[in-house]
Image 1 (cartoon, helix red, strand yellow):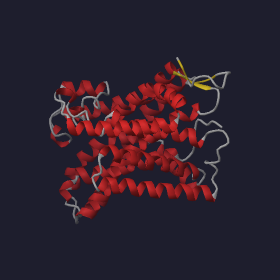
Image 2 (cartoon, helix red, strand yellow):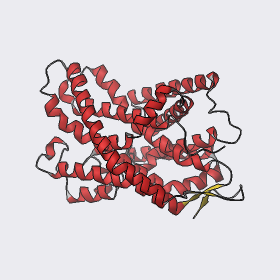
Image 3 (tube, helix red, strand yellow):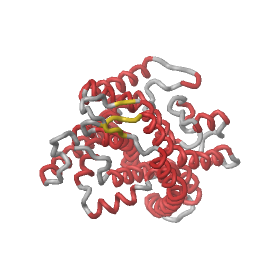
Image 4 (cartoon, helix red, strand yellow):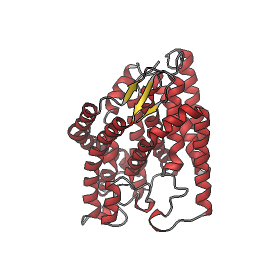
Length: 374
């Protein structure tokens, strides 16, 4: 069985973006003096990005699972770049004007430089770690995604030759090893902090690979894992609860990041399975529709959250009340900005991507052929 689309995933993507928004709201509005428990709980939302990475690996692998299918690398690169970069560049331009302008101190710690802008234009900030927060800190995950896209054809080949279990273990080992090296060695200059930094590809690869392997497990011929039976749903709920509890506990207890990211990879995979099983639920379909704006929402939310703080600080009431009312107003503003970006940039560029690069997946006559072709 092979599928190019599964319901419920846009809903998960949208909720993950909302979780990141809540995390940043409490982090950047630190002047509220929120109760420690509220702040700590909200910071779990930062791991919405972990879910994004797992989702990417899963969705990109879906159409390649069926026997006799291979990846057209040129078409894949073309479609991905058209899908991701136009909206990214527009959001970057908006953030760069703020970060380099006279009111830069509202959105960044130091005024953005030309070097910062150049690095971000080419989405290289996860290679040059000191630039991560120079313009819009949230854009680091787009840099990571693009690097993962470039590596994807090689990962597909390794997945078919080595198998999913070996690939996941190798990626988890890379994450742990990179973290350990970061504790032993310090790199200076523009690459300072690369080793062991949780934003970089070596650390995050395990999450992307987990999504890829999940696609092959759920959609392999004869699999019943996606049949929405009560038994399957119970299994998925249990898996999500157990892995989620382990990942949250690891984050709270400051477990080494190399292990923590692997636990969130497992949690992300369980959540993907869970949401896919509830795809036909009426509420899930509504969330799916809203979730189509998740990418645009994520791109614009951080600078708007930062700009909203001086206004929110003027609202009457205690910290939690200000957070709720100010957060709701900020959410509405972010949603409006995301809708504009989605309608006039993201959706049109996506359509162009499909039109210009329609054949990302090739059907080959020999089902045993390699899963990658140039």
